[in-house]
Image (cartoon, rainbow, N blue to C red; front, top):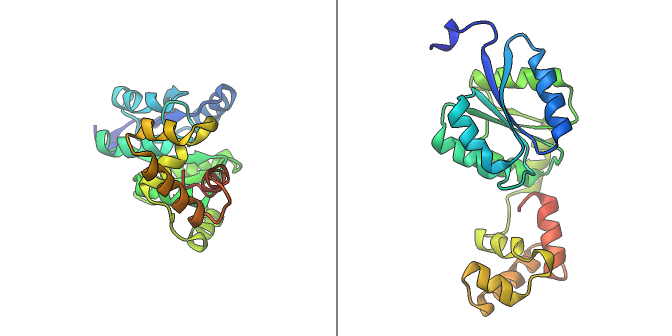
Length: 210
């Protein structure tokens, strides 16, 4: 049905947030807007695409830190499988690297959670008109921070370094040789100007590169 012929409660919203209380509060507040309707709520990233294909939202409002799959990875999948659904990333972490990755994944907007719900509702309406909505302070920070210096493989190796994984563990998990893993780790440590791989991983996460 054409968008301009739909009833007043017209904008269909999917909400992905792993904290149940936050998810419920957001759904309640957005549902109070006359023209917004939360048609689906999920608490896991790997449930987003199925929910979108089932409920056909106009806008998907995604947190980044989700179990199963990050909101950024889910945004990229939505671009492929539900291209008519506009994506707004809503996160606690206003990290410049996250903004760049969100835009690369096809997101139409990026907002931090500390703003008023009225601004969020307005952002939902704006992205439906084709606008890109980005938190101004975060946009300025992203421009000054520059691009992610890590390669995709360096990011993979750092991600695999969690929970005290050994070089052998990482090599097995990523199907690489141990010497290749060491090279990637050394390069990542150098690029992040840190002293070891755990510091490199923390710095990369802080910048939003992972």
